[in-house]
Image (cartoon, rainbow, N blue to C red):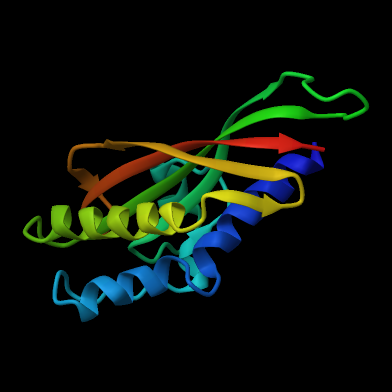
Length: 163
């Protein structure tokens, strides 16, 4: 299913492109609402890798955002199409610090940047991909990992895809 990796790539490019996550984080920092956070393109990873595996197999730079497809439903709404249905996508924010103090604030800021990016990109994403605007955010508790302490949050949303 190469169209799945294509859709994941489009979603990841949304975060790394002009007007994406970094632009929204800069906007929040310049307004005085939050401290500056730098998220480079190498910190947006288009893969579904569990935290434990990522830390053992690669060099992880925090904060990071993992982009992946969680589920697919081919509803065959359009005749003549190989795929016409929905894809449930995830932007998973991961943050780690050596102290617990500012961890929650950084995760919240990253989520604000991610959902601002989604809010600004409602509608047609091109290549047969449409985003309606709805999303759900789930926060996980702080646990051991990363630099000492780690916290994650997931933004899930549905894309309508026609291929």
